[in-house]
Length: 112
Image (cartoon, rainbow, N blue to C red; front, side, top):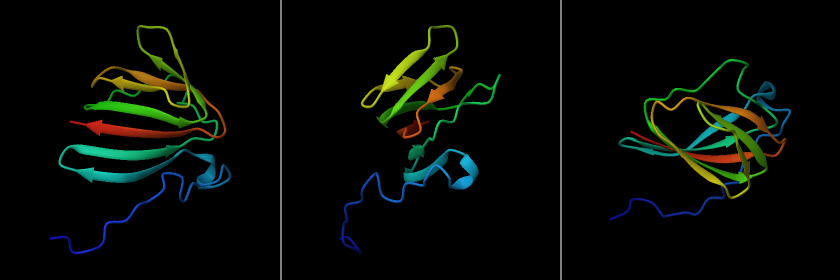
């Protein structure tokens, strides 16, 4: 039996404007439970710092919901992403964000 009513929420609720959060990407956890984390990432033209690579201990599936981006994966050509494109990045595969448009919104699912 549920203790509260099930409610719908919009992925686009409470987007932070490009002037918010000191111009940094905004990470909002949408769901988290037993080894799974789903988050929304609001990007406003940000990129990974020069020379920085993500090297995560868990698999990550990302969906670019809005905007455009370039994702660099170590050892292969960059991926040019448009709204609707998604990528599975296995654990320990180094990657970085080389470009995002000012309206980019991602959904990331971390599993591990």
